[in-house]
Image (cartoon, rainbow, N blue to C red; front, side, top):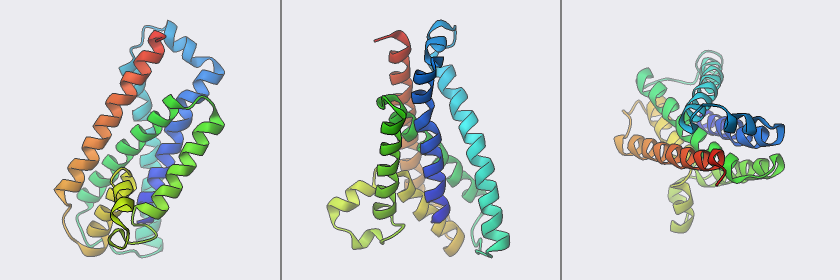
Length: 191
């Protein structure tokens, strides 16, 4: 469960600071003048941050499996798939934060609020079934909630992934990608 929370936080932080920094350094003006489409810029950022997240995840997985001797009772392919989708969705969440934030400090505050919400409402700190229904509602919007549940099933219980959780996490990631793409396109067009 820790790896899901750390991975979500890393991806959200990297993405959340992305466009805010580029607005402050003037790089966004270069994007506006370049022949690049919003989709090309966004996909490039997704790939770059996804690779960075994958490298960190590889190191964390190695530490968990070979140093801390955390068992891997399930399928390694399902483990990798879950982490890949978790990173994709978390990056979308971060890009959304980046597009609505007007300063680095505002982006960092949104990231910290997301981290605190994830600690308390994702099943990391308190089991979701012990929360009231309105607190569980918050967990439905946090990628870590699905990542924690899926990774615990795969690693610790040896249970195959719950396709509903995979589909929800993937759908959330696609929706966030589309929202980020529309937001970036509008910003580049000057609307």
